[in-house]
Structure formats: structure tokens, C-alpha cells
Length: 212
Image (cartoon, rainbow, N blue to C red; front, side, top):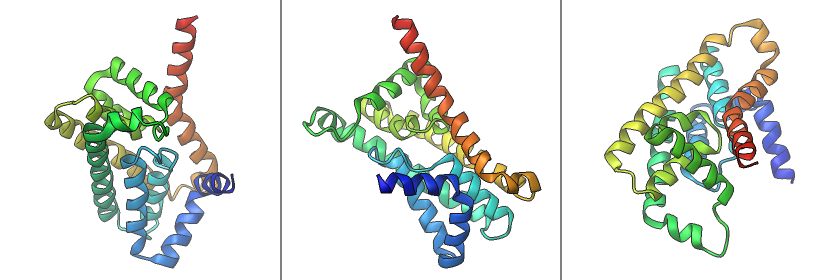
């Protein structure tokens, strides 16, 4: 319980925590950010890690001159791309064993949400899922599980990651000097999380009422 409390505090005050990390670790900050993004996209057991809000906050620090924007985007892209491909490989080679194992390593409800997303959007799910927490963690896994042609997955993966990383980091970079944004960063972080989760909530409500 304490872990999730600390995680929530990190997400809600991500700008302050990242500033502290930059001050303490300097260039190693890039590696820390890359590791978080890699785990959030590449490991099906860590869908709760911050994604959108982390990119926005990192972009804000780049706008303030604490991080190099070009290097930041490149490193985060490599991390997300590598994570996606690892996730695809896991789904492709041992996905069925993980699902059928007695220990529930992968939550069935998360897989069901991602399957529903695929049924609605097809292969474009790999791109669209980048903007939906939890779904983006399981989309590559389900793509590998469903034996999507790797070349097709690769194209969607590159496009999706470029759009996701550039949109949030550049938004943070552009807005960081705005006084209102600086004074209401926690509120904006909550807004980003709410907007990101909205498609999942709408999908669940539609599913519930359509069954009824």
C-alpha cells in the first residue's frame, strides 16, 4: 500500500521529483527516464508506471534547459521502441503459457480491454494504444499473441511511438514557461491522466450497457 502511495505522490508531483532527480543524477536522468518508459511499455507486469505525465514533465524540464530536447526524445523513443518489441516477443513466444499458468501474472481484464480495442481499431491499435494507459502496455503483447506479422507491427510501432513521445514532450517543452502552467502543474498532470484514461472508461461503459 505504501508503494502505491509513493507512486501516486510521484505522478502528482512529477515535476518536482524529476527536478530533484536531474539535480542529483545529472546525465543519468536520461537513463532513469528511459528505464521507466521501457518498463511501462515492455513489461506486462508494470502498466501502472507513469507514461504521458512523465513525458510532459520531462519535456517541461527540457524547456527550462535542464535536459536536451533532441537527446531526450531520441532516448525515450529507443526505450519505448525496445519495450514494445520485447513485449511483442514475449506475447509471440510465451504469451499463451503466461495466460494459462496457474499464477495470474497477466490480468484477464486488461487483456479483454486490449482485445476489444483490437476488434474495434484493427492493427491501428498499436498506434492508438500509445495514448491509452494500460492498453498501451498490453497492445504489443496481444499483437504478438495474435501472431500479427512483425513487419506490420514494426511500422505501427515506429509511427505510434514517434507520435506519442513527440506530442507530450514537445507540449511540455512549449508550455513550461507559461506562468499558469507552472502554478497548476499538478492539476494539468491530473488532467492528462484523466484524458488518457477516458477511452478505457467509455469503452467499459459501452460494453456494460450494450450487454444489458
